Amino acid sequence: MISLARKNLFAEKTRLLISVGGVAFSVLLILVLLSLYQGWQTLIASYVNGVKADVWVMQEGTVDMFHSVTLIPITFRENLKEMDGVGEVDRLLMRRVSIELGGKDVDLQLIGYDTVSGRGGPSRVVAGSDSPSRGEIILDRVFTNSNYLKLNDEIVVSGRNFKIVGISEGGNFIVTQTGFIPIEDAEELLEMQIFANYFLVSVKEGFGAEGVIQTIEANSDLDARGRAEFLEDNQGLVTETFLPIIEVLVLIGFAVGVAIVGLTVYTATIEKSREYGILKAIGAGNTYLYQTIFEQSLISSLLGFAVGVALTYAVDSAAGALVPEFVTVIRPVDIALVLGVAVLMSIFASFIPIKRIAGLDPLVVFKS
Amino acid sequence: MTVLKLEKIFKIYGEGRTEVRAVNGVDLEVGAGEVVLIMGPSGSGKTTLLSIAGGILKPTSGKVLWEGEEITALSEGKLPRRRLGTIGFIFQTFNLLANLSALENVALAGGLAGVRWGEARKRSQEILTSLGLQERLIHFPRDLSGGEKQRVSVARALINDPKLILADEPTANLDSKAGHDVADLLRDVAKKRSKAVVVVSHDQRIRDIADRVLWLEDGKFKELAKMVSDPTCGMQVEQSPENPHLVWEGKTYYFCSAGCKKEFAEQKHV
Image (cartoon, rainbow over all chains, first blue to last red; front, top):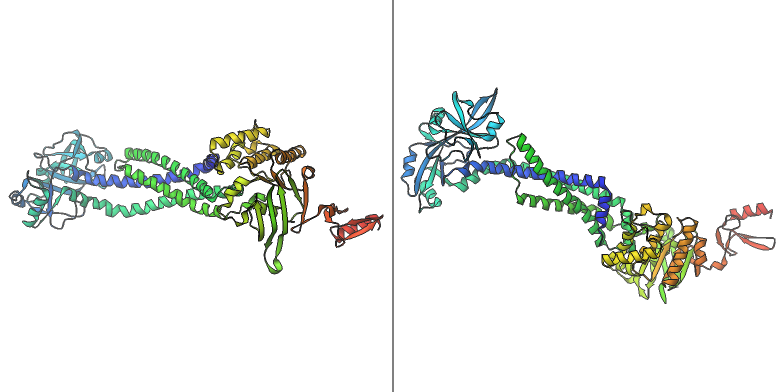
């Protein structure tokens, strides 16, 4: 049968535009927030994910790389090597430092790693060398873009000059980015000759990471965590800090969508209440009338959803190009979630108009 | 064959001192092929009676029967479906849906009754063509004249082949020619398609095509033979000694009020 909802909806183009625009804005807001949240989760996980270590060893009580400082005497390295199942052990030095660039202070997550094994170094080098020598540094792409730096430029870190020999990806921690230098330079710069922040352990063949973790913890005062566990601990920074804010903003986005679709469908229903009365009088059942209203609401929401998704891709892409820190990941599951939200919006938005029609007296047809 | 039967219909609003009897014990039977015209002053209960006959309004008491089936006993859920198949409505203001074409307006009523959309469109096209609207099928109500709109409304009333057509002032918004056309159309609907047609109207053109004319006043039918015109204001009044009246030049005149009687008496120096 003909869709009265579609006919009415497309006959009132301005109202349709407002309604679709409202949902699109709402979808944009929700999806950008979700993609940003997902992007941050991915960013935070990216470095740990890229490090080829089966087990991360750290000072007892360490929460994650961002909330805790872990200091382990270098002598533990030999102890670790002697434990069952422990293969290679690499030392990692890590500290957030402030450097001056273009007249302003900029934070950099300085990471000193063993350039021979390469463990703990950059995940992906996109330009230049993937192994810095003494006095050289590999910087994250977001950092070089934000600070207008390029290969062979020099920066000063704690009074020492470093030449940029490589540009990497996967080292953007949102509020700061990574700079990779040889462990020897890091020792001197951070005065950490007798300490490590983390030990990166590879597990020998025939042993499992869980067993090695238990061995390390049983034979030392250190914490040992598998890659997946440590990754999750670090993602906690985003989950705990931003998730509640994002939840509130998503709710606001949802409310905005419901309000706009609800208002436009309601005013359309009021305007057409005589026509609904005519339909009631000639014999249309309430189910048909409710379906018509819900269909109007659903079409607005689905159109708004489609426009909103397209806008999200456009905004994410444009913002990512303009602001390198704006890293987003749009997952199919999030799009499906927002589709569900859009359908939910149409259900909520239909509620009051349907109540109005339910109480409509078909006798209006006799009024001239 | 009786299509519509009303038995002792009462519609009472309010109670005690504020009680209003909009319909006060009406009985009526209308057969197939018959055109019944209901006339009466404003507020006499015509539209209320038509709404009750059409199953849109529940009477306070009494029975409404469509083709022998008592619809006053039907539940609110079943009534609309029954109405779709039994009754076609024609309204004074046409009441077409603004965003549907003439064809869609008619076909929608078929679709609501469960007719497949393709079949409903085909049937609508045939009816509209038979009513002379073959050139206006895809036009929207805003592009149609009053007479054309009312013919679309008649087509919509006929799409489900109902036995009973109820029309409320169907010619009130039409010019002289269109009014005549619609009156003739209603007669054809009754005679050629064997429908029972009940029309509420003040229009003389409808009176000309009606098989029966009923006068409704104060919620009751009164015999039209006893109704006369007030010579002062022209209103139809009952030829009753209870109404103001006087005799002039050997003839008795009846008035709607003492004021009209006085005015008449002054003019004629009675």
